[in-house]
Image 1: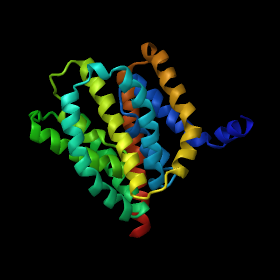
Image 2 (image 1 turned 120 degrees about the vertical axis):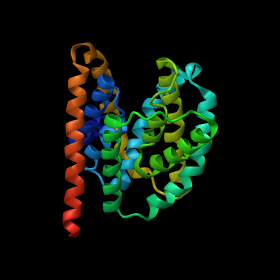
Image 3 (image 1 turned 60 degrees about the vertical axis):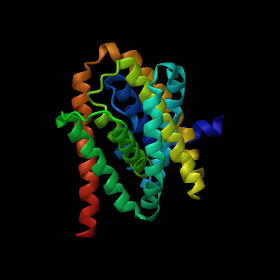
Length: 250
């Protein structure tokens, strides 16, 4: 136990990043991964950051998905999951052969696009079998390359007619399946997860404490103010990372 606690103390930077991401998610509803990704890449290489985020997200979604599985739109989950299975092999090929710097730029560009689309996109995409499978394929690609499979999913269902509790349950179940499948794909493809798992063990308490603290603080915090605060932090962190990498090449 003493060795573990000293390890947690040695991971103070990434621990605070995960705590912050989990805390903000509880208050504002933002996805854990999109907040944690640019922050964790200040401490880890991109190809280590992605599986760490998948392990963290899988843990959170597993518990909530199991508790709410009866409320989920399972037919939608099945169709989208089929698309995900088609998109992940392409994503794994991309992930394997892209350099760390290029992957870091790609992830931060995805974060920036997500933020922009969350603020300005009001287009309704019709829900149908074809669009559901295509969305699943895009989600599978982004999940395994960046750890963020939620962007296509959320854009597609931004104006869904599903009741809020059904939508949340569907998110938890689908993202758990996506996270778990991405991790299995890494193992099948021969990508080592030992390093990511070792880091995940030290970051897991921060995830749990952040979620609990956020839920306890929710009624005292103005969600709109926190949402703007998070947008500013992510814009700055992502832009800084992209510019700093590009400067080294030009």
